[in-house]
Each structure stands twice: as structure tokens, then as C-alpha cells.
Image 1 (cartoon, helix red, strand yellow):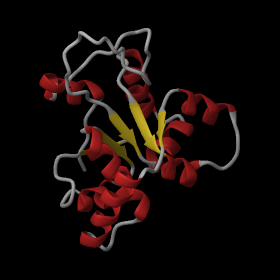
Image 2: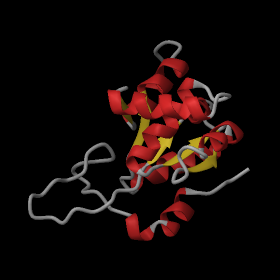
Image 3: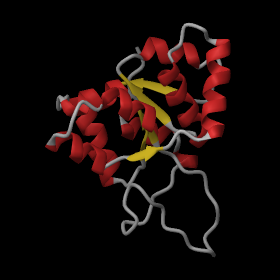
Image 4: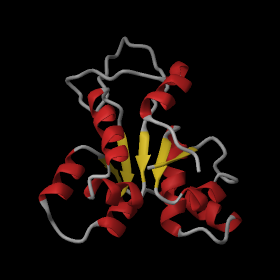
Length: 163
């Protein structure tokens, strides 16, 4: 099982690391026409990570708070919200307030579908999570490392870490 903190990941990816403007918060990068383009580093959470947040698991809350403090974007594909959402609560609303929910667009659906063709034991939502992270170069936090590791055959650049 691979484990790592946001700080560990941040240090390993220092060349790709970008601090966002505080006015933009975790969801939006400051955009200046004159600023150079840089690769951004972010996190993608799967359903298990959201459930762990909801249950207030210490490790994922530390990761979440560090990401919020350092303005690291956290993305969750809309399919993950579908799997996780079981009605409105204060905790769920707070979690949604700190993440970016990514719609399922055609490029993402195609990438996930191609992964499902090559890794037939994978679930569609896991494939969407990995495709989503691969499109941005994110690190994925999950409670189901073995399933997402199988998908790394199709998305070798995505790092998968346990919550």
C-alpha cells in the first residue's frame, strides 16, 4: 500500500508545483496575461476519500486541510459525487465547498472508456477518477489502492496514494 502526505508529494513534484493566489482560493488559479504558463499540481479524491472525510478520518483531514492552506486544488469527478452523495448534511456541504467537482465531458469519458477496455476488471467510476487525474497530472487519494493501481497500466503517470 502506497502512502504519502501532501507535503511528501509536494516535495517530490517541486518542479511542477505552483502556488495559487490566495484571492483565487483552491478552486481558481489567478490568471495574469503576462504570467508564464506552468504545470499545476493538484489532488483528485475518489469516493473512499470522500467517505473518509465525512467520517473525519485524521489522515485525510490532514491532507485536506494542508491542501486548503496551500491552495492546492482538489478535484472530484461528478461520478464520484454520485456514488458518495446520500443526502444533504452539514459535513457533506463543507466538503463540497472545498473541492472542485469536475463534469463528465467527452474527452474524460473517452479516456475512461479506453481504460476500461484495457483493464476489464476496473469499475467505470475508478476509470473516470484515473482519467480525470491523468488529464491534469494530479495525485489520486483513495481507500482502494489495489483497484486504482490496476488502472495505472493505462495511466502510468498518475500516482495513487492511500487515505
